[in-house]
Length: 626
Image (cartoon, rainbow, N blue to C red):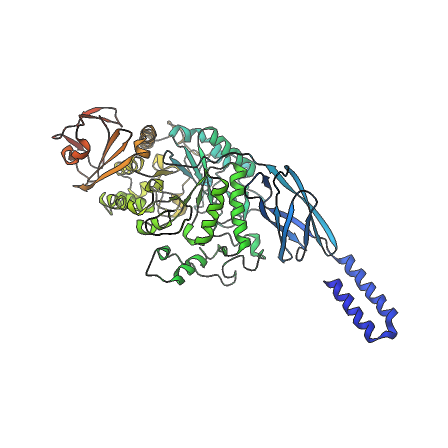
């Protein structure tokens, strides 16, 4: 463009002053020569996605090239790739749309970037697709949730990494504590022995920002945080877990990123985020607005466009370049690491239309994968709205089959804390008709964002055991937060509820991963949960069976699970005192039954219409009926 300016300028001068043609042409030539000498070659620092694969359904990929002197650049391929479009909005980013023709062989694909009359070349790797199918997760699974920084420090060499914001400081509740991927690999046998079949890690991508251990404020969406390990180690961890029959769930964030991301210096696209960095839209957390037939569309607009926090800009998901980036990033991690499922963070704050397209494209590429959406609301009427096929809406398929069941969680926690009786649990489950399939919900008592179960129970182990007996025998897909199996209590502060697992650090004075390193109380809880997981996994009625429950009376809650001719009775006493349960009240389910096996003890007991079951305060019974 600048060369064109000189030519036009020179032409006008020649027309105006014909007597000075020779001198003017010399000046023009000199200026052109100076410009040519000073013109900079395009600089390429990074390309995302860093590679793609042959044989993918999604064979059209939009590359984001990071660098300099890229504004107005052109691109061409000298290999089998087709360049479909090239776009730039500033000198630091170039978007190149490529198509990988069917039959293209794996290998490096040469792409030439031209700008200012100069060229720069880079090789884009195409790998052969593995063909591996994600395992998904289902009612047959029990999920273990780990915050990697707080679990096990398996490699002390990465406790401090030059160029990253924070080093290990276990004395600071909101600091990094040093847990990493190698630590998780070291404890996979521990998880297998407990009976877990799926592993969910909070995000492992780079968070070069404050409170970096958290993981949800990305500064690089394609790079594992070096304080946890690297991409290859993550891939190894997934492989080692799957060798042990443990599937791995990707915790993905499509809604926001860190203000410390490189993008904040200059956005790749002028409409990359909602609002602006200088004037961010305020947070708006009224998720109920989506299901509110009396609400105004402005409420939903403010929820979607408002930043999640003032230090995490929201993606503008109405922008096609943003959409491509997020979708490709999700697919890339699944294919690269061989992942089995996705947990999508802060789901309602995203653009509903885009997320439906996102989920469809992922499921088109990986039909066996499933996605659990985090929807943080305890009201089934609102929660159910976000499940595909929900009874609370029509004519919209978002391809999301699983949700985080905050409704059941809140009821369980209110029982633990003494705020509510078991009746609230019954009431929540009585609203399962709102869901297309309540069995697909991921159920839990605690996680990385909410108070731990033992904190809610204030140390009452009997209440704690009751809550997890219900979790393992009712409908849904149960999830356990790391350390809950030994009753880590924490506080109501995030930094403390995400406590370090005792024994995860070589300097710890005991190792709670071992029998000898646990206290008697911890071993009791560990054995209790392990037994419950074994009961659940050994009896399909607790995973696939029909649930029939009866309204609690006198603090006694009773329900039955039935599958393939087998029937089980679960009775819980939610009161402080010893109480009796009469079989006669449940005659529709106990008729013709003569005995039952207590699955926790293995003892047989008679079941007759006139018979009674006595339960101590805050205790339970799981009977296999004969």
